[in-house]
Length: 311
Picture 1 (cartoon, rainbow, N blue to C red):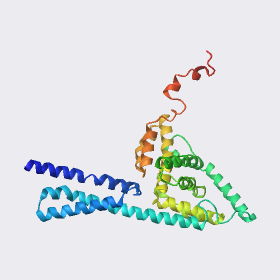
Picture 2 (cartoon, rainbow, N blue to C red):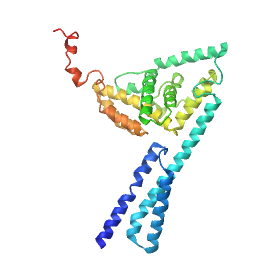
Picture 3 (cartoon, rainbow, N blue to C red):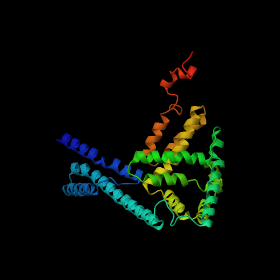
Picture 4 (tube, rainbow, N blue to C red):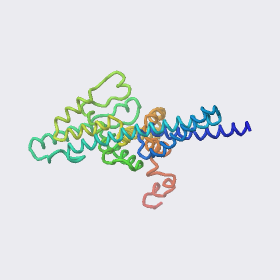
């Protein structure tokens, strides 16, 4: 009988720990949209009552079976309510910002005045500087080069891809955050991780100055505020897109023989915050950067020998 009691207690403990992976996933992704509150509320009540009953009877089989379950169900329920509250607050904030600008992607009024059009022209000249602003991390990498504009270009595609993998997010917001996330670097330049140890720039002032110089400045500030807050799923995906774009560059440099690029990859992967970002990163690391045009099958194609099929 003692063996059966131990076996029962062990089974209860194993089942009780089933709550913790769910709690960890909620904490990791910072969202609990698909978690059923009534289900976990009932689990909380049930496991708590059994735990109290076990202590009343001083039955350690019951206590050990349900105590960890009660703690796990409480933890999952609290995290669910907490992140749902945060998500609802973010929705309200985004809706308020959208109301202030009439639509999520348009200014309060059409740009028709001569002064507003001149401001817009100046803005477009300014963003052109991003194509001439180098990404300074490549200095330390030892090979490759990239402008901020080139980084932004692919980051937008990565953001779109991540939103497709997620399926339950606002793709437009993800892409707008990817498009704007390095806008200030036209004025501040790009500082890599080594530079940031010693030099500090006032990116907020740069954004504020840009915002006051264009008729749609408040929209830009709204987009970047959400990005910097890192509370919405969209903002986390956008940040992961920023990191994954660099991961793609590192994989490309690694494939051409830069061993230093390979050593940078583990730290970068640890920065990814979403399940979608981590999943995509693993796919990237498992895929040669030239496979899209020169796969194993392509290598056997006579085209690469004679192009027109003639010997």
